[in-house]
Amino acid sequence: MSAVLIDGKAAAAELRAEVAAEVAALPRAPGLATLLVGDDPASQIYVRNKRRLCVEAGMRDLHRHVPGDVSQGELAGIIDELADDAEVTGILLQLPLPGQLDANALLARIPPAKDVDGLTERSAGRLALGTPGLVPCTPSGVMHLLDRAGVALEGAEAVVVGRSSLVGKPQAQLLLGRNATVTTCHSRTRDLVSVTRRADVLVAAAGVPRMIGPDAVKPGAVVIDVGMHRLESGLCGDVDTERVAEVASAITPVPGGVGPMTIAMLLRNTVLAARLAGEAAVPAVEGRVGAGR
Ligand code: NAP
Image 1 (spheres, rainbow, N blue to C red):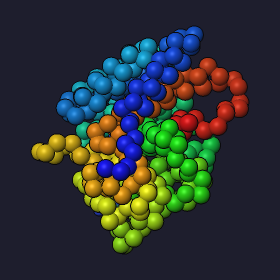
Image 2 (tube, rainbow, N blue to C red):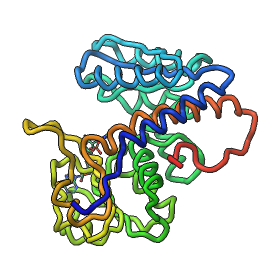
Image 3 (cartoon, protein in one colour):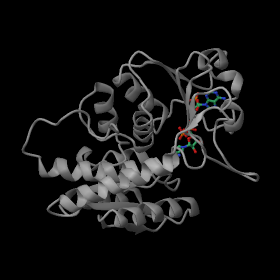
Image 4 (cartoon, helix red, strand yellow):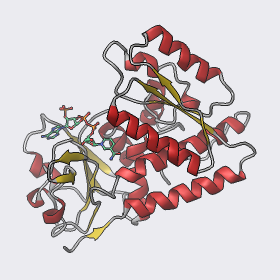
C-alpha cells in the first residue's frame, strides 16, 4: 500500500476531546435531545452511541423515545415542545421514520438554531447561500478530515459521487465554499470513471459496495470513502480500499474513516448551537458554523 491512511478514529477522538473542553468552559452544559421513533434496531444503536458520546463530552442527554405508531400531529407537538424548551440546545430527529410520518414536514419544525443535524430546508438553504448555519455532520466530518490531513482544496478538482441531501449535495457545497472546482456525479452520470479520474479529491458517497476501483482514481488523488456496508465478509465502503491505496496518495479506511467523524461533528454542532444561543444578541458570526474548520 502506498497511500497514507487518514485516521478518522483518531481525528474524532481528538475533536470530541476539544468539544469536551469547550463544554467545560460554558456556563451551562448544552442539552442534546435525540428523538427516536419506534424500535428500528439500527436506529437504536445509532442513537445509543450518540447519547453515550454526548454524555462523555459533558453534555446533557435529553433523549425522547416515542412509540412507532405515533401520529404526525403528536410527533409535531413533541418537536414543537423541544423547540420551545430553553433547556434543549439541539434536536436530532433520528431517520428513517416509520412510513406513516412525513419526515420533511417534521424536520421543518426544528428551528435552524437547534438543527444540529443540519438537515432542515432552512439549514440547507443557508448552506447553499453560504450564510452561517449548522451543516450536516457527515460532509462536515469529511471537510475536517481533509483539513487535518493538510489537503489543499483551493483550485483542486473535487468529484463527489452521490447527490443525496444527507451527504452528496452538502459535500459538494462545502467543497465549493473552499474554492475547489466541484463535479457531482449520480446514477445517471455517463462514463463515471472518466469523471472520477479527473479528481484530485474524490469523495465516494453512492452507497454501492467497492464501486470505486483503481481504474477510477487519478494517481496521487486523495480518496474519501463515505460508504458503509455490512457484508457477510465484514464492513466495507464504496471504495475498493486495498487496490485503490496502491494508486491514491491518501485514503480513508472503512471502518475507522468517515464513520467516527459523524457523531463527533454532531457534538461539535451542539456546542456551536449552544454558543450561538448564548450569543443570540450578537449579530456577527465568525465564518461558517460547523464547516469543520
Ligand atoms: P443515498 O441517499 O442512497 O444516495 C446515493 C447517491 O449515490 C444518489 O445520489 C445516487 O444517484 C448515487 N448513486 C447510486 N448508485 C450510483 C452509481 N452506480 N454511480 C453513481 N452514483 C450512484 O445514500 P446516502 O445517504 O447519501 O449515503 C451514501 C453512502 O454513505 C451509504 O453507503 C451510506 O451508508 C453511507 N453513509 C455513511 C455515513 C457515515 O457516517 N459513515 C453517513 C451517511 C451515509 P441518484 O440520485 O441518481 O439516485
